[in-house]
Amino acid sequence: MQETFLSHLIELRSRLVRAVGTVLAVFALLSFWAGDIYDLLAQPMLQTLPAGTRMIATGVVTPFFVPIKVTLMVAFVVCLPMVLYQAWAFVAPGLYAHEKRLALPLVLGSTVLFLLGMAFCYFIVFGWVFKFIAEFAPESINLAPDIEEYLSFVMTMFLAFGLTFEVPVIVVLLTRIGVVDIEALKKGRPYVVVGAFVVAAVITPPDVISQFMLALPMWLLYELGIVIARAVTPQQRRDAVVPGTSDDA
Image 1 (cartoon, one colour):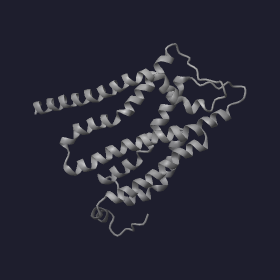
Image 2 (cartoon, one colour):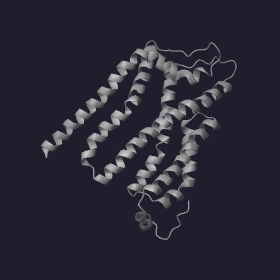
Image 3 (cartoon, one colour):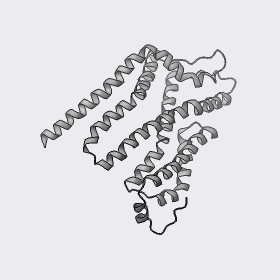
Image 4 (tube, one colour):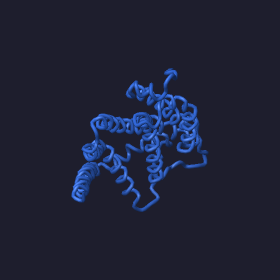
């Protein structure tokens, strides 16, 4: 028993070293372009500022550390498939065949959906949000955002939209392990819609457009999760859980 536990620890350490080493190697390569990477991240905000206006850095070491943090984030995103593969390789030997068939698509799907959520936020949401902030600001204010606060805001939004796009994976997983059934998911639609707008109101800036742009995908992805769950759930399980109920959406 002790040898088995130690072998698992050694295997875990090996997988962690490979994952972290890959991220650090990519980070070291990208660090030569850290400033350019931050400039790219700042483009949605810069495009809404008045001509000639730039962002500011209020800290002494902020101009150095903020681009480094952004570059590390990009390196992790680039290496995410490798990181998830190491996690998969560690847990796969202990899974049954049917669990392996389920786990691998969930890992791949969650990765793609999280990246899609970040892309949706960067290319679509940021433009609306920063435009609203710039137009709402009084003319007596010189709008010059701090780069560290901007990074904190961007990271929060990326995380919010990335997790929002994970809704189909969560719905499918809960259905497959038997926590909920299709009928319960369909009956929960009104609560999901209300909850989506509540979450959007808490996370996003106080404008209707950005709140709507988070809440609407959350609801639509929930519906997509129901469709996928219906397709991957065995018919006999659906019939056994909800006998005699209608299958209409």
